[in-house]
Length: 223
Image (cartoon, rainbow, N blue to C red; front, side, top):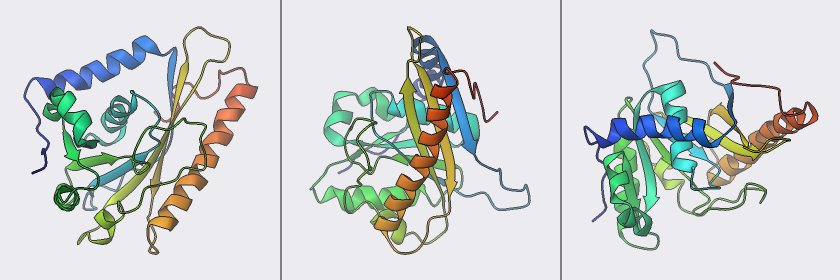
């Protein structure tokens, strides 16, 4: 039996505020670089399926900040069951469980598709499966996750995001967040993985240009 997401009346708003406060406290700047266009008002809104690079303790908070800034949907995030059981308070803010190698994976994937049938929802997952250094490229996705997408009965908006950190010449680091809308192609998981790595190279080019510019370019870009 999987642990399904909850949205507690106190914990969920608390973590929204906490994620903003902590990123402002621990980072010198948070820069957003987004290629994102809101759908016209007359178009039916889509649920958002967001995948990112899994590099740190910060990942869930970063994803929550992205949601608040660009999408403002009901937030859900897939977590390894053993990690979630150690931090059950996160369940009250939209986290739900995945137990690798267990039968319940089928249930988790079905639950994810159920969440993605509601246009008011956003779901975050990390197909790398565990934390890797942001410098460990190309990004390699674990097998099986794409079954969520290939068995969807309605369209979703897929979004890639990348979080990259540099100190430049300052005591506190700068966090750069790159957000790209992606029209996922047919052809399976390998094509999505290739597209994720291709867009990462775009983000890295921007990141390097900031370094050349002394770390000052792009402050709060994407407003």
